[in-house]
Length: 330
Ligand code: 3EB
Image 1 (cartoon, rainbow, N blue to C red):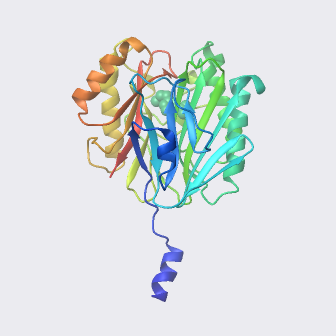
Image 2 (cartoon, helix red, strand yellow):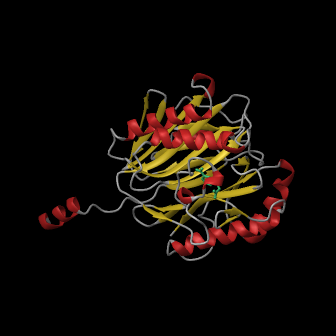
Image 3 (spheres, rainbow, N blue to C red):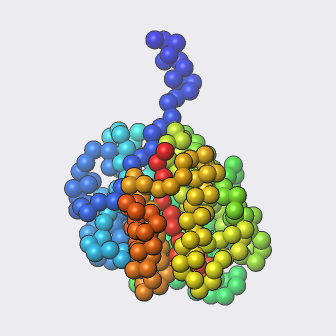
């Protein structure tokens, strides 16, 4: 019907969320499947691919053999490159990734500024400019004291590189430290041609309002993002932070308990049913490799059946031992 068509043009159907899953598979096989927007491997041993949709994340997996993470959409996907960026787009969705060597940019601040400036410049040329979710991985994240800590320098550079691109609000994000030999900053994102809805956690001070003690530049992220069709929640890195303070120093299990309470609070805040399920892939970033079995046991006990990728990563506050991020489909 003509009237229906016009209505669709003015109020396009919300874009269905990409399907995110973990699988034991060769990247080549998954990249050949229709609708594959991105594929991620983890750690130095991951099989490589020259496809722009492939990203080798600089975090080691505690699982052997390590799974790959797959993003799939319902429509055909076009890959491309632009400067240091690799990207792919299909069905209104966009994956973009940039990897920069800090030695080419002079430290975490200027590297983050360069990465974000490139990403924002590219996004401005695209219809898929509504960033839903961002991931940041940088080396030695806790090195340096006070405002000089590398994470805080990264926060300064990220904000400078973003400039006013996220003036209406930040996307959901994760920032984790890796232990790769090369000082690489990896930033990748999921964007859409329709806006999502930012979600905050009533138990936590919004990160962009953290008091001065956490650095010159408040971290630029929302606690979660409800994707345009409200059919999935993209959950930012979530740790044992209550108010703005870290809770349960030196107590791994208490931090995990607190983190689960925060995750549930986010689901409630998003108006979603409680709990995670077999369709809700999560990642647990574990600071000390010796804690990995304890984290795995905890997750299996408290979130049975939930796919969890266990990764070795440093949380951006020295006292935090574990952080969880991921997805909940409605
Ligand atoms: C926190 O709650 C933990 O700087 O992008 C979590 C998620 C954290 C994202 C970021 C930092 C970031 O403050 C740290």
